[in-house]
Length: 279
Image (cartoon, rainbow, N blue to C red; front, side):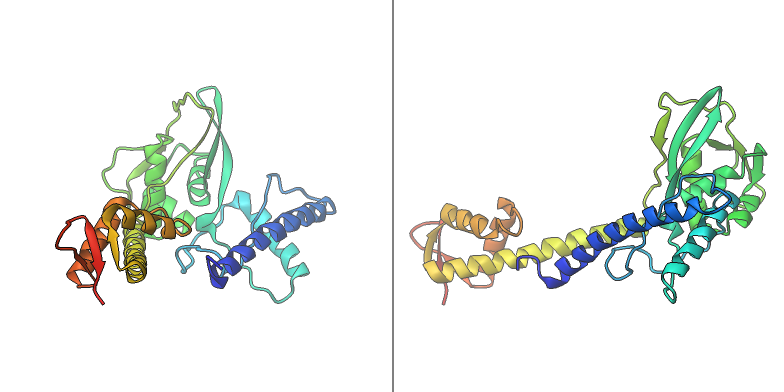
């Protein structure tokens, strides 16, 4: 009742997806036991309902699956369509990640990274240097995704470059002298400016919704009480809002001032910290 049917329905579908995916992985592993060839890697998936998850971008990023993963992807597709005939399975490679063992300077590192990062790094399995054009042609990533994920590998120092731009014949080198105090870590990717902008918009929208909620709460309280001291009004607003969020006192004060400007409230003539409701 507090959150609404639509929100809880999506949450329920998310939990269902996790349960179904766990069962699918178990069945897939059983399916593999009857296959003559092994995948050669540990492989697990999450199958998600499109309408239930905040998956971000709606367009699928072009991507060539690395040869080392092709067999796993094709085998799972075969298994899935055998069990769910007619269902469409869309791979969200931009949300996938894996662990890659990297041996450098007589040490082995276990690195968690995105599939895009993995695809680039795997290209240096047999060579120490490639151009940006070769990397992008092989991975099929668009300019934006290519630059973002390649830059993350350069920032981690696993790859090196002397070029200023990440395009054309600019050389990218494998850092054969790479060292790290940690042997197990994750390579992160800086969020896109668009994502940062969307986050700021979301925060702004949430704040506006909260201000409207607080103004409505103040009006309800004052309509019922007619006359109220400042501190008591603050306490009642906090008490009524606690089930939804914890309002900050400066925000409540701002909402009171807004309602005074809108002539819903007024300060009493005899006291500056007492308000009366304007009918």
